[in-house]
Image (cartoon, rainbow, N blue to C red; front, side, top):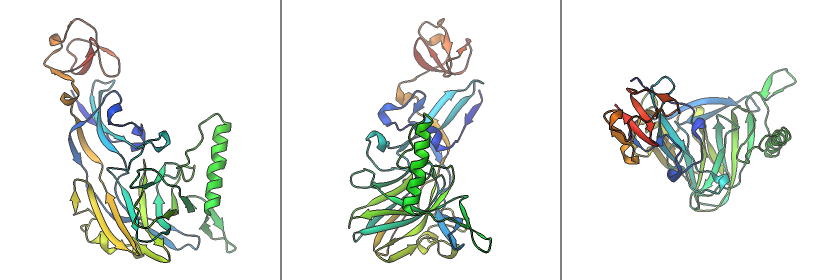
Length: 336
């Protein structure tokens, strides 16, 4: 039987479940192979003055845990792919990302922390979370939206700068349109409702000594630096990597300081302790079926009532001699 390993957009699997409520066909993984972790400069964007804004790009997205989704597709092939779970704050869950890409800031003084970010998909949920309580905190965003330009007197086009109030109005107006059309309201954690990148500043009111985590749940987020009480830090000066990140990559941007959490870069600048965690995505994953109580049998005749109809994971009846995972007598089996 042909085996297929598929990698898809994490948003496909954003089910908001926890380890005790895994859906059908999702299991703990037995083996996992991670891809390379990289830190690189990328996605340089323009500001309203047409000056370059550079962002440090990590790998991955922030998520709670990773499992293995395993099933037999309609062609009879085994499909094994990663399945990610996320903290669902809107359902009252609490916690912080355990894996993936995120940035943690611990200011020495209180004030307004302005984090410069590039968000790949403005209509995906972007979170700022108190690391102690695991609860989301309010923030505002001001900056730019891909494709939104202003034509100057000399007929040149510059990106349109949107204030925090204007960004909120864009969000609320679109959400109202969705409700009027009979659809769900747009999440308050969505910055902008179009399927476009946004870049600018996340503004957080911070307390001295408290830690805050910034991440996107199902899309990549770039880090351009921050400002607190008049002091600032730039993560990608003049389009290169800041010293802290340049020290932990090779010539191709591949991280050289990888541990079981990912590539972890820690430093203190402008009165803020920073932890940037970069994580790769799996390139291969296999399920741990035995740990979940699924029996492995040599052939279908060993199952109880071997003459009972057998079905694949898609619910399609299969004939005797079918190889792979089957359901018979209400139980799952692996037929080899």
